[in-house]
Length: 219
Image (cartoon, rainbow, N blue to C red; front, side, top):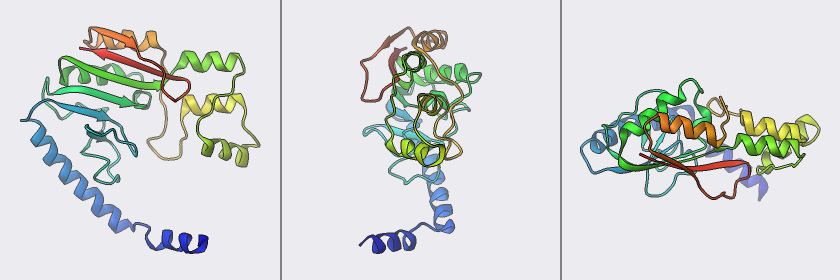
């Protein structure tokens, strides 16, 4: 059975031509969706949902090779969003802001404020710099991803607290966009969001992820 499974993976593996066709279709579809959204009712937007999109949201991602059910709008968040002012009711960013240069993040957050309606909300989940430093100082080992743990065992001789910190701060680095440019604590993001035009920022309860900062900003 395992041999058959491996064989089917190779046979059904997408070819370069198939991937190119998917990318082309995704870009065409993306432009169509942007035009429709520009003249419709306020919508909910998820930035960087990747392989785990949140139901009920328009999904924006830079990865144009994703299946169409995982991405609606293909866009680099280092550039202005392709949406009119006050056209979005709610924004969710799951582990996204750390993938933006800290020098560019103020402009990205101002763009989020621009497209949100008055009273709109933005939810941010990102590695918590304060929690990571505390756990490192207390020698508390917190690693959620067993695949990453196994990779460390296979190639680096074992899982240490220092390697856990490296993974959380700098990401897995197993594909081009999986790199972290910065890490933040609540105070840093609170100041950034208030400066970007939001009127309040609060911490939300912890999720199942460890060493994660979860917050809500209102415009």
